[in-house]
Image 1 (tube, one colour):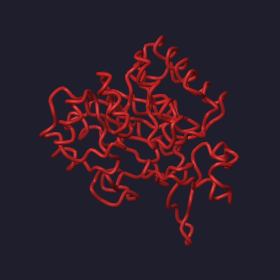
Image 2 (cartoon, rainbow, N blue to C red):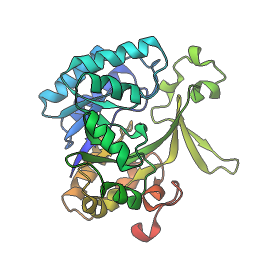
Image 3 (tube, rainbow, N blue to C red):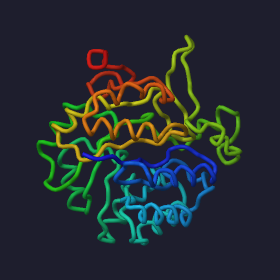
Image 4 (cartoon, helix red, strand yellow):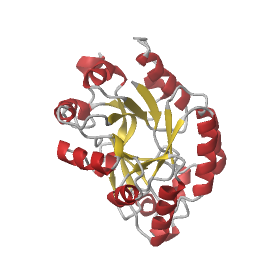
Length: 297
């Protein structure tokens, strides 16, 4: 079992983004997913910039995967998607079914992303026939549901699980960050740049509830499966996805790497560098914002 660095879900400056991936080249991750998956208005980095970063990471020994946008809303979005499919140098993660169609028609192998909503082995069979060689279950799938699905999964397809980060729960044509600032989506003034780990929302009682990230809704808590490695191994999961955060990501990666190597103390310091409370309810078949105290003390 190895580690993947998931696509950047937030909007950071060019300088911060380049610096992040320059550092990531030395982290103990087997692969890095690159590209804008949330909002096409986030264009401080264009596709040529992402491809330049991809080349540098590949030269550093990382497997590079180009992640596609989750909501395709315009012809310009389609043009970018077609360019990604045609590039041919790197594996592609398909995050909506239009990307699956284009990749299949091009006879290009791909990763089936978590937003394809794969809940049954029949869908996995279809994706395998179309060229998928790795897949991610939706983030709300429990251990027991994943186990049942993998009992009938096609042979030879790797399973990757979202193991760390704020959970991407939903996408909308509306921009919630712009709405928060009473701005129209098309004149959002790129306010997402002010929130490098998303904009937290609380209930009227002041309890953390959700995080808004442009058109994406995320969990308030940070999904954290570092204490679930034995069960993940037992299921035959090949890769764990760690979702980028703006600070201390290297420490997160090294904690997971140490835990994979058998260091029982690796999880202890993780709470100090997380941008929210630890949650793992979905994995245990309960409400996502819950935390399994029986497993974690």
